Amino acid sequence: MVSLVSSSPAAVADLAVDEAAQLLSGRRIVVLTGAGVSTDSGIPDYRGEGAPKRNPMTFDQFLGSASYRKRYWAGSHLGWRMFDAARPNESHRILAELEDAGLVSGVITQNVDGLHARAGTKHLVDLHGSMDRVNCLRCGQTFARASIAERISADNPWLTEPSLVRMAPDGDAEVSEYEAFVTPACTVCGGVLKPDVVFFGEFIPTEKFAEASAMVASSDAMVIAGSSLVVNSGIRLLEQARRRKLPIVIINRGATKGDNRAAVKIDSGTSETLRALAARLLP
Image (tube, rainbow, N blue to C red; front, side, top):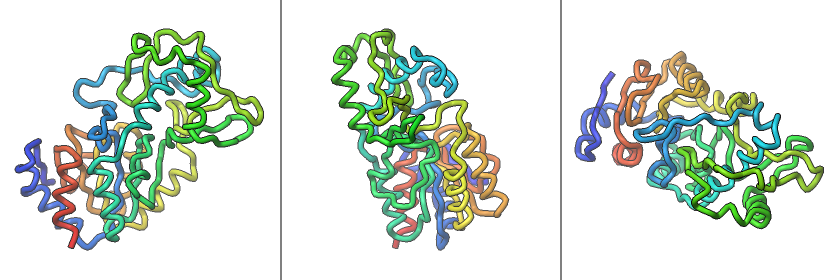
C-alpha cells in the first residue's frame, strides 16, 4: 500500500496521487463519502481534531419519551439552519463533474446534509437519509424540512436565543432549555414526526443498502473520501469491494478502519486531493 502523510498541497500531488490515478484510470469508480467531505462547507466533522464527545439520542429514546422528542427537535431545528445555509464545496463539485464525465458511477454518502445532491450528483445513495425530509412515523406522510422549520420557528420564537444552545459536530445542537418547546406533529394524522435520517439504534433501510451494494457491484474501483469507516455500513461496502478485488483508494485525514485494505491511502484533505486526482483523470 502506498501512503502519503501530509497536508501540504504541493506534497499531495506526488507519488500517492499518481499511484491512485494510475489505479483508477479507465475504471468506473464508486465513491463512498463521510463527514470529512463536508468540513470545507462549514459542517463540523464527527471525529476530527477538536470535535467534542457526544452521546447521540437513540431511536428508542426518541420514540419512548415526549421530553426526548422535544430535546431532539429543538437541537435538530438549530442544526437544520446550519445545514440549510451550507453550500457544496470543491469536493462535492468535483465528484459531480467526474460523474458527468462518466468516470464516477455514483456516490454513496454517509452524510445527511444533502450537499452532494445540491452539487449535481445524479446517482446518489444517502445511506443515512437526508435532513431535508421529514416523515410521519404513523401514516408515512413525507414533508419538506423547510415547511416544518417554518412551523417550528413560528411556534418557538425563543429558540433563537444563542445563550440556550451549543452546536455539536453533526450540525445538531445541544439545547439546555427545551421543556417549553412545541414539537411539530403530522398535519395529516397528528402522528410523531421524525427527520428522514437513521438514528443510533436504527437499521439502514434494506432497500437503501441494496442500492448501495448494487452500485459497488457495477463499478470497477472504489474511492472512500472523508470517512474514518467507524460506522459498520461503510466497512460492509468496503468489504464487498475488496472481495470483488476492486482497487480501493482511501482519502482521509487520520487513520481509518479500512487502511489495511486499501491499495492507496492518502492522508490529506478531500478537496485538494480530489482536485489533484481529477486533474489526472479528466481528459
